[in-house]
Image (cartoon, rainbow, N blue to C red; front, side, top):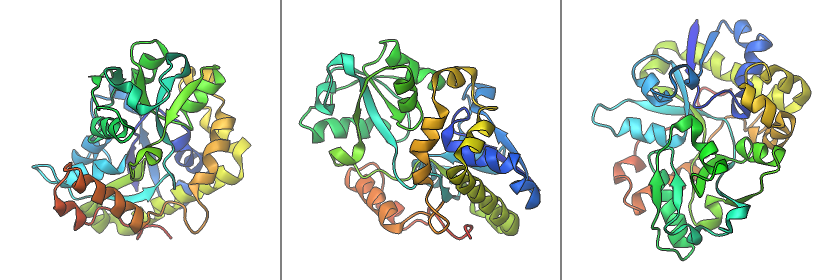
Length: 302
């Protein structure tokens, strides 16, 4: 069966399990012909969630909030998260150390480069207020695939990164950063990224989807235990910029523990999901209905 997967970003360490599983034949052995859709192909004109909605993709990679968004839009999509790539949040809001901005409250009246994600701007402002600031930001929306560069080029004072990718790039290039993690400033963030699909897709192709998810799990666990081999595979797919500027071995070394183990890889904990959903409701970002919606399942993971 052919399965199209819409990536959330150009190929990076968070995707290594897919590339390893494809290269080593785990998908083929499971009867799966996988196609990985790179957002660079359309310069992020269509988000992964939209590709899922339009049936361009069978699965999408995105933050958990995309599942919430799809389930609560006017033309509802019965999206469901089925696999958490990382067991912990590895993202941060960052500033250049040279900026002197060492706390979120110091971002008042500064420029923040936003991905325009569903709750992103509110989360950053709330972090600032939780730290004693006013939450007053100048928010800009550059081209998504160039947002990291706006920080490096001095066009923005702060942005959101994955510590295990852009964070490693900064270290590789000797760029010092100040990092503000959401959990340190009272924000209970959900899983990101996750693999999501629709309930209708699962109903039609449950056996094949179980095979796909478990071949993917096998890819991530192989990458964790065979890091040199896994990096040699991923290096064939990352952009030239990333290949030249990121120590991919260091990136995987930093990321691998968060893939989990044979028992936890891919699985989502009810407590963590509920805490995030409750926070969204308490902050009036979503209606209470999200507390009763079936937004994730571990049922495809074996």
